[in-house]
Length: 296
Image 1 (tube, helix red, strand yellow):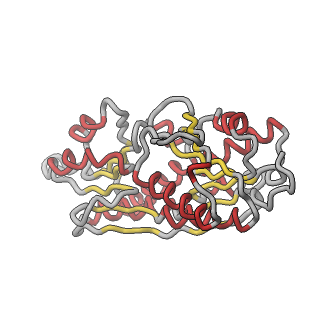
Image 2: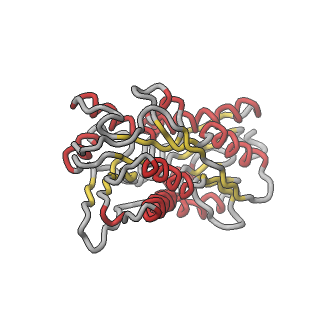
């Protein structure tokens, strides 16, 4: 392998500022890595988890002993040049980086629209939105009434989902400008407390990941808040864990394992670049219901 310049390994770099440990704690991250691992096992190839937090990402791309990369998110577009310089195949997740770049993304906008339509169809008119904070730090609360509410470090997928939430709300004659938006890292255990403390009038909470939604369910249990009796909660990703929560989580589902497997195959096959958009599907479970007649 050394003679041929091959290492028989694929490198997976977590998205944004997230470390490997955070990926493995995440329900989404575990399923994505599982999908990559399955494809590597089938090909007799090793999977290398490349730790690339903010200060080390470019060095990791230059030095990792791998034959190709899976770059974890659209925030990694800046790393493409480094991968190209090494002449290694790679695929970027959750971003269409153009016709010359392998990419896999989900239809986040349509999934967000479906989530809002489900909730407004049940009669909800008072919402809170949990957006994904892509840098480390505590939750950031964006309350209505401000002229501009720029998110700190949203990726293109986050923007697409916000656009979907905006469109779905507009269909019900509601404005996203009137909805509190709270940025949290997906597994932040304080997320639920921040939502319930700042937006007690919300009867429905839209999130951008199952992990965020699970933190809401956990906090609801601690406070004796009934889900969906007092508040409906909807996740995003459709991880296996979302079906095991109490109550089981309504979520916008994607094939996370299949996405990981496909990403690995695209790197291993090293064929002409292609851009793949994967579908999503609303899976309705017991965490959503019509709001009570009187807001708590």
